[in-house]
Each structure stands twice: as structure tokens, then as C-alpha cells.
Amino acid sequence: MSTALHTDRYELTMLDAALRDGTADRHCVFELFGRRLPGGRRFGVVAGTGRLLSLIQDFRFGDDELRFLRDERVVDAATLDFLEGYRFGGSITGYREGELYFPGSPILTVEGSFAEAVILETLALSVLNHDSAIATAAARMAIAAGERPLSEMGSRRAGEHSAVAAARAAYIVGFAATSNLEAGRTWSIPTMGTAAHAWTLLHDTEEAAFRAQIDALGVDTTLLIDTYDIHEGVATAVRVAGTSLGGVRIDSGDLPIVAGQVRAQLDELGAAKTRITVTSDLDEFAIASLAASPVDSYGVGTSVVTGSGYPTAGMVYKLVARQDAAGSWVGVEKASVDKASKGGRKAAFRTLDQGTATSELIVVSDGFEELDTVATHPDARALHVPLVVAGEPDAAYLGREGVTAARAHHSRVLEELPVRALALSRSDPAIPTVFVERDG
Figure 1 (cartoon, helix red, strand yellow):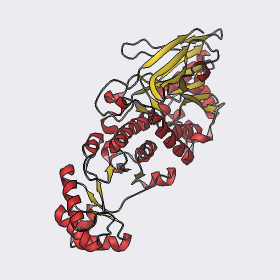
Figure 2: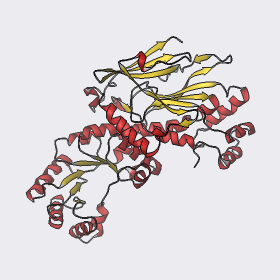
Figure 3: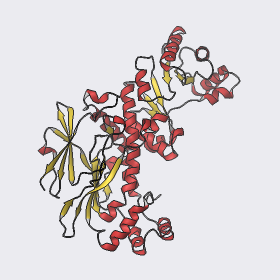
Figure 4: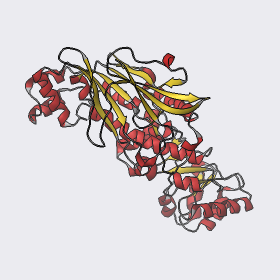
């Protein structure tokens, strides 16, 4: 399926005008970055990169797309001819998926002609703004949960495609499973789920519902015990399943208090190994409040798929360097109040002190000479990797293998954060972003 019309109209009208005035072939550098971290958060997480690379492969204008543009008179005939043969042939470098980012981090750098790079703006921002917002919120939840596993179960609170993307983003930052079967099929994320309140309400009694579930799924299943009275639900669950019952789920009430009462009752009944899962509108703060409670795992829905109050990462896509009419390179930047950008090509590094991150170092060059490398900054880790070379994406970042690699990378880089970065309260970014101008 083509992704070419996942594009704002003004990108194609700019392309149309650039083909007319001869600037369409000018070599350009676009940069995707965030000016700030939403919600006073202390770090952000890059997610969606692998999805974006696959979607760029499908960015093709077929007969249906061209017919629509022609019928709507979006562009002229010459531009339609250009779009018919469109293939992104430039290069993309950027932060690896699962990497941390901070204000001003050059998360993605797209190089190519103006014509081929400008029309990727909407697609790139749609994917990275959504997925990074989800990943950032989910990472905070994973920190709050500690060693206790988290499951993503928010599909009913998101659009059908966004739900799959959200499950993927949450898994990258440490969630253990998802309720979404399409996410399981597409990205090999472990899936989970047993029964909702409707299952209990379907049967004449709670006991009948529990017996039927155990007959179907075995005693290691998890029984939902709060459809009616929780205390009675626990008693019924153990009576039906025995002390080898796998787990119970609590979806209502004052969770710290209820979890303690349920644990005490299970232990009294001899079901000391029965696990307790809690759900009920959890976010990172609710999870943190349960740290001292006898809870074994969490299920998170609405909060994770909506970015826990911040459903977009606030990233932008700006032209930062271009060739002029004579072929010389010029750094360009936007000077609007509160919306300024930083011109020039950039190399990005994370400076480290004994393995702990101390700053986000961005080296800026107006020219097009060789960019700084980690050899120039031996106390730092280079953040940019080649993602697309001459139009071809690196297969290491695609598909299921790309998700696995992103999950492992996130786990590694999270260990670099200073301790203050793990707090959930609003604050400044955990490390400063430092821009250094390099003579071009």
C-alpha cells in the first residue's frame, strides 16, 4: 500500500513551484528535532525509526495517487510526471531507535534534493512524533515498575493503526507483552489476555465463570476477581482452582489497599504463589505509588497509548542547510520567536564521565566538509548512524529484528542516565544540550 498521500498538501505545492523555478534539484539537508521535552520530562526516547524506513520504501505515487492529485488539481502535469517516477534516493542518518534524546537533538538528518526530501516531512513527523511520545511515557512507566513486568492493553483507546504502533513503542522500552494480536503478528511482541468482566457477567454465577475459564485455560490462568465483591471473588477463585491458581487481576478500588488485602487473603487460603496483577487506569505515578504493595505485574491501557497526557513529542522538520545558486553550501535557520531552529549540518555525541551521561554535544558546521567523529571526542559516544544510503535502508533497523535491536539498545543506553533522570517529577532535562560551532 502506498504511503505517498500521507503528506500535507503544501509539500506538493512547494515541490510544484520548485520544479517551475529550478530550485527543486538543489541539494538540501533537513533535520528532525524537538525544541523541548513535553511535560517537563527529563529525557525522551526515539521510537518509530524502523517503521518510518519501511514506510519510505512504500512512498510511491501509483495510478490511484496520481489520479487523485490530477482530479483535485493539486499540482501541474510536469509535477505529476516527476511524482510518477519518485523514489527517495538520498541519505538519512539519525539516532538509533530506542536511543534517548534531549532538546535540540538532531534525531534525523535527511539529505537529498529539495524535491525528494521536502515531501517526506509529514510522514516522518507523523511516525516519530507519535511513537516517540508513547515510548517516552512507557519508559517512565517501566522505570516506576522496576523488575515487575508491564503489559500494554490500550488498543481500545487508540486508532486501529496507532494501537499497533503504540504496542511496538512500549515493547521497545521494556513492556513485556501486549494485548494486541496484530502487534504480535507484525512485530513478534508476546501477547497476553484471558477474560474481561463480560465473561463473568455472561454466566449465572461467578463460580461458573471461573470454572469454565479454568476448564479452557488451565489453573495457571488469571481470574478477574472484582466483578462483584473482591473478597468473595478471591475465595471463589481459590475454591475453584485450588492453591495452584496462577493469578488474579484487580481492576478497581483503592489499589494499594486492595492489593494488600488480596495478598493477605490468598496467603491465608494457602495460595501464596498466586500472582496479583493490577490494571485500572494506571500511569507512571500510580505505578510508582504501588511500589511497596504486594503486586506482581501491571496492565496499562489509556495512559500508555496517549503518551500519559502528552500524545505528541512536539518534533519538527526543518531545512538547515542548502546549496545556493552557485553551488556553495549555506546554513539556514528559522528565527521566529519561540520557534527558532539551528542552521548547519550537525554531528551528535553523548559525553560520558565513567559511563554516566553528562551532556548532549552537538557540533554544528555551516560547510559540507567531513563532520566530527568520535575520534575527535574520545570522552563521548557518537549518536548518529547511517539509516538510509543512496535510497536503500539498512535492513538491521527494519522489521522484527529491528524491534529486537531497538529494545536491546534502549536497555543499554538507559544505564547511562544519571540517577536524577529517573525521577518522575517535572524538571529540566537530565543533561544539558551543548552546541559547538565548527568553522566550515
